[in-house]
Image (cartoon, rainbow, N blue to C red; front, top):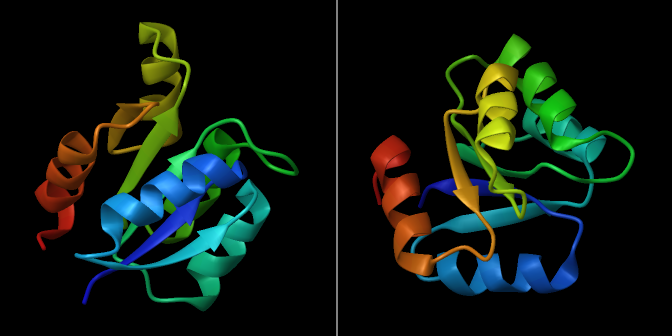
Length: 118
């Protein structure tokens, strides 16, 4: 089963993501950007779902750090900020795609499937 890293500091958003993913993927949580970077280094993930606004290190900095060492690892930005400028910043940081919160389960699964299949 493919493995997803969910970088999300908000418990209710994390619970929603686990509900969406539990039938199809294994997952692990990082509660801040630095933890996400550390877990990617230590683990074997197929994709990262990256919240943008997090403590310690934000999702944009974490994405840059992850992409530096793992350019082929897909990173999907998750953010409540759905402005075009936010999308642009996420893509410039190295995100491969962008999902707005609240995340639609169908769109989330389609986006993940686009990068890593089921």
